[in-house]
Length: 148
Figure 1 (cartoon, one colour):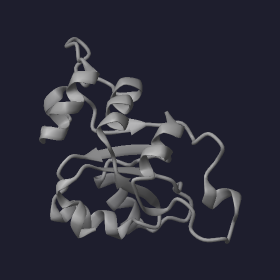
Figure 2: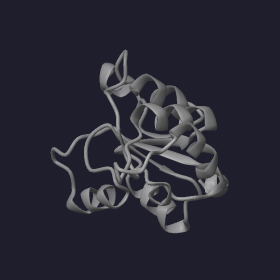
Figure 3: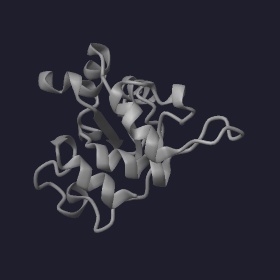
Figure 4: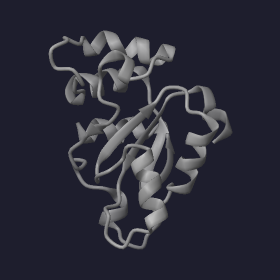
């Protein structure tokens, strides 16, 4: 995870709340991943954020998101905090990459996604590897694309 410090990281919660440790539940809430299939994007994650991701790696899928997927995610699933102000979601992707926070741009800091089309590997083949959980590196873009 050391290499990803200056790259954009997307985190998608895969596991639900049943039989979840209270400590893990609190960490997921701090990452703004309150419900199953919610997604959070961190432009320049701090050391503390990377530590939280490491703690919940068995409950989430995370990886390096590219600009194209981020733009599509904002366009399809982005919601404005203040509905009276208009937001151009396509243009905001470049500002997020530059390091601005989502709240500064009047965008909610999390995204609610659909369950992925064609299912999740960990759910289809129970007991055979961990599937999508953990670090997916570049493959997170494919997963998010299937969930839009």
